[in-house]
Amino acid sequence: MELANINRVYFVGIGGIGMSALARYFAKRGVVVCGYDKTRTNLTIELEREGILITYLDEESSISVCFQKNHDDTLVVYTPAIPKNSNILNHFKSNGFSLKKRSEVLGIISQGMFCIAVAGTHGKTTTSSMVAHILTDTGFGCTAFLGGITSNYNSNVLFGKNNVVVVEADEYDRSFLTLHPDVAVVTSMDADHLDIYGDESHLHESFHLFAEQLKTDGKLFVKDGLPLAGITYSATKNSTLKASNIHVENGNFVFDFEDGYTTIKELNLAMPGKHNVENAVAAIGVALSLGIHPKSIKKAVASFKGVKRRFEKQVNTAKHIYIDDYAHHPEELRACFDAVKQLHPDKKLTVIFQPHLFTRTRDFADDFAKVLSTADDVILLEIYPARELPIDGVNSQMLLDKIKSSNKELCGKDLVVQHIKNKNPELLLTVGAGDIDTLVEPLKNALNHA
Image (cartoon, rainbow, N blue to C red):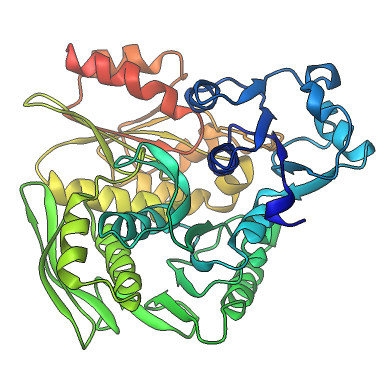
C-alpha cells in the first residue's frame, strides 16, 4: 500500500507510545484516524483532544461507522501486544482489511525519504530524540517518530518540511527489519526480549541483519565494544567519536567532543550520566555527517530538555530530590544509579522499582538483584505483566530474596505513597516501564508537602 493512497487509518492499540506517534502523523496529513485501546490514559486523552475518536470497548459494535466495511483506501495498524482473541482485531481480519504492524507502516512512510534509524536494547529513545532535536533546533529539519514524549516539543512526533525522517528502530519482534536507513545508530545489544529471541546470539543476529539493511553509501554509528563494524563512539574509550574532559557543573554534564576532524569544546548537557554523554556523542556524529555546523550543534545540545520519564527530576528542594526514570533492564538501572550517585554522592538513595514482564524478571533476576543491592533502600512493587501471563515461581518476592541489602521490602502499589510519606526520603528514585508512572504525581505532591 502506498502512502498517498491511504485516506483512513484505524489503530488497534492506539495508546502505545509508538502507535500514538503514527496516529498523530496521519491525523496531521488530514487522514481519518480512529482507534481502540484497553485503557484510557493521559496519552489517549491528548489524542482525543486532538480530534481522534477512540473507543475503550473491545466490541465490533464500537468500531466507527466508516471502518465497519473494507475500502481500498483503508489501513489498519495493530500492535503485537493486542491479544489474538480481540473482537476488534478479528473484525478487521475476517473482513479482509489491509493489516500492518507499526514497524511495517514506518517502513512505508520512510520509503523514498532520507532515513535516520536509531536502534538498541536501550538508549534509542534518548538518542533518537537528541538527533531529532538537533536537526530541528538548527533549522535542518526532520520528521521524527519517537518512543517517548520529548520535553522540548511535548510530543512523540515531529513534522519537518524536508525529506528527512528520524525513526526509533525497535528490535522487539524484529520490527526494525522493515527499515532501510541512510544513517543508522546502534546504541546497545544487551540481551533482552529473550521471550522472542530465545538467546543472545539470535538477538545479535537480528542486529547484524539490521546493519545489512543500510543503504550502499550509508553510515553506521556503533557504540564502541559492540560486535558490529561501523563508526565507533564512546564516552569512556578511545573510539572514532569520543567525549573527553567529562565533568559536572551546576547539575549538568559538560564535555568535549572530537572525531579526528572536528572538536567541539565545553558541550553542556542537561541529561545526567555518562550513558547520556555517550548518546549525545552519537547524535552529534549524525548531525556532523549531515553537514550541520558545530556551533549550531553545541547550541542545540545545550537546549535539549530530555525525554519524559528519562531521568526526569520531579522534585528538587532543600529537603527532597525525586527523580523518575523508565529504566527496566539491569544495564539501564546501573546507568541510572550511577548518574544519580554522581550528581548526589552524599545522599542516601531510596529506590522504588516495578519489574516489567515475568520473562525479563526471570531471565535477569540475578543481574537485577546485583544492581538493586547497590541502593541504600529498596522498595519493590509487584511485577507489571504487560502482555504476559504469570509464570510459576517468578514474582517480586523471588527477586527481593536475591537482593543483598538489609533495607529491602515489598509494597503494594496502592500503599506506596503513604509509605514514602512516612519514610520521608532525601533522595528518591522511581524506576520501571509499567504503570509506575501513575505514582509520579502523587509522590511528587507528597514530597512537596512533607
